[in-house]
Length: 358
Image (cartoon, rainbow, N blue to C red; front, top):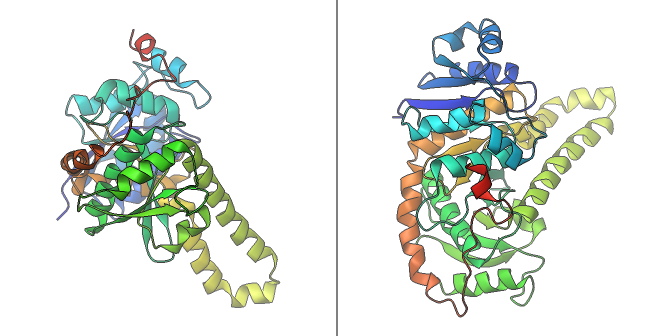
């Protein structure tokens, strides 16, 4: 039985907020009334939207905040001035044990930095990673990192591997097959970082997952690999390409049919559209933090936001954070195989974290 989940919502983040946020909560409540929502944002705007969706009023509390992190602000600028923002306050509520999980459709970079500053990382993790579920021909795959870390070293990829395995196992209760995303399947291909990570994972003696080597981009949707590991730069490009391809296929398929064939193929087209609808897979998780944070796509609509609420429920009911912590203990066993020195890069190598916290 699922337990009641207290969700902190940055109600001002993303496009068309807070309207889509409140509507998304309303959609979610129609099939799951086990959640309670703490809404952080401008009170007058939230009340106006809640009045359109009376159901939300009984399952929420408004916390008035002064500022909003803008989508076009640099992460550093946003973090420096954002201690009174809806995003900051939503994340902070977890540290105060008021909420179980935080959800935002706002500025991804700012959300990552603020989460890192307030919540800190799990011991042994250098950098949090952004992970999401992708549809494939068999079921769903976990893919990470999707944009949190543009550059990664071997240690980061090993952390992503252990966290991705824990996420998959907690959701599907099976031992995952894991691969590194690369430009080829041969061991000699790819960057030095990838090749070094490959050599370490190949010697993995842990029983938490099965390492299957490399995977190429055109194999992601096959469903043969459960967890795909990559750096944030490559992962984000792959994500946006997949979303664009899905939209391209559905739109051009409809254009190629006349009215009669469109009518006759309506059910099949609708099934295809639902299968490829990116809103159904909305909600990426920042893995590696002491408390869970979920990132909704900024441009999604109310339906997509409702699906990100589903992700929040899955994370809490699967006890994901504790499973990641226990899983990391097993990773230490094969890090000792390193034939070289790994430099532990600080989380904010590209950002001067000390200036943010002042």
